[in-house]
Amino acid sequence: MTRLKSYSLNSELNKKTSVRFTYTPVHGVGTRTVKMAMKCFDLPDLIEVPLQKDPNPDFPTVKFPNPEEGAGVLELSVQAAEAGGSKHILASDPDADRLAVAEKSSDGKWKVFTGNELGAIFGWWAVECWKRKGSNDPANTFMLSSTVSSKILDTIAKKEGVNFEDTLTG
Image (cartoon, rainbow, N blue to C red):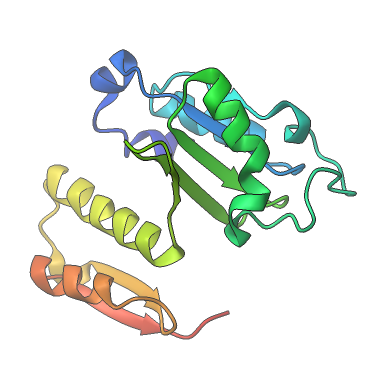
């Protein structure tokens, strides 16, 4: 968490934000770590999904506990977000190694981001943090992406003058 805190470049803004995140671990183990991460970034407390917040190996509220599977898995998250006034959902799978993100659009519909979209956003943000910290060693800086992913990170790396490696999956 100390290292994670070092990536918090907007602490004062985060303390003042009205943005709220709804979070579900889909009956898994991610809640404690996600709450600590939110504190590292001085973000408001999470809105939790009551029926999914505790670990339960039977996954009683979903057919399949992978939030990347889409809307059905996020149904209770949407309800909790709507009730709590949140326009942003974070969902991890039960062992917390997969992430889904959804955002409520101005038309009231929920947009679930694809893995490629999230990779592009996270990659862009990593480069922004790298630049803001005054890093100046592009020869020893790399962006990685699996061969089945979008090539947008390759484009970002070229634009920023850093190395890119296309990797195998697994």
